[in-house]
Length: 146
Image 1 (cartoon, rainbow, N blue to C red):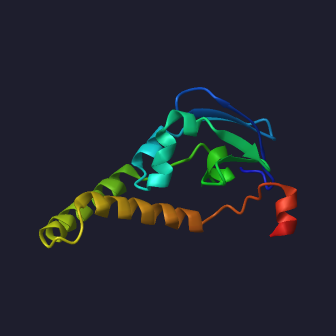
Image 2 (tube, one colour):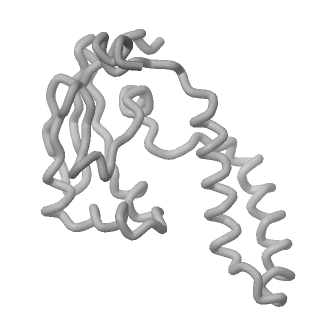
């Protein structure tokens, strides 16, 4: 279970794109951001594949951030070591086959590439998960500001 109030207290880079995060309830998670960064189509996110830029992370108000909040993650996802949406493998395979079948006709009609359709499906799934937020507050002062 995720605590109602949660803060990151320490962060250490332990690999090219891997960080070890310590939380104020003594939980420690090691997260590898490479897959997330590599799969992103947004150039501002992909820019963090630059090792020097990735290494410029910091903790601010109990959150892990880069730049002027150019890159940040919901603290509940970091706590649960979940950077990418969870997929049921069989369900995801069925959806992918369906998308690819539809994509063939879309590609023939010059509307979308198969890759764009797959990324749209992944993006929609991620957004659906985000709307079912756990309601975790970053720290007690955030509750007063909201």
